[in-house]
Length: 129
Image 1 (cartoon, rainbow, N blue to C red):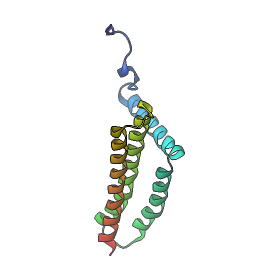
Image 2 (cartoon, rainbow, N blue to C red):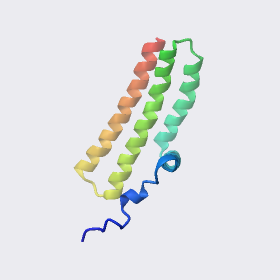
Image 3 (cartoon, rainbow, N blue to C red):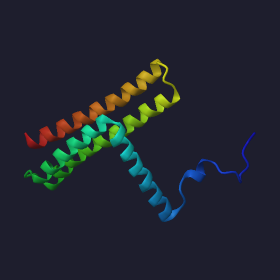
């Protein structure tokens, strides 16, 4: 049976319009960061890397553009880890059964994070060495 146009659907969960939507989106984002920090050791490790690298990036004698790259690379890796964790959670939510496609999805998320770490290494290496 199809839903009536008056019944609430997924759009009702969007959180309003205008400033209300922005505030709700910010709250949801903070909840996601908190969940990642509390539940994902890899995310906590990347936060530590950011806590170390970002102040160093602000301290070293480089151009503003180079400093931006030195800061953006570890932040990008945090974003990749959030997506990787989301992929893992979705796969586990769907089924804990071992399946080749589930393994591929998780492995690809992990590979994305590996690429993120390579980006950090390359950016920092090229700029500082």
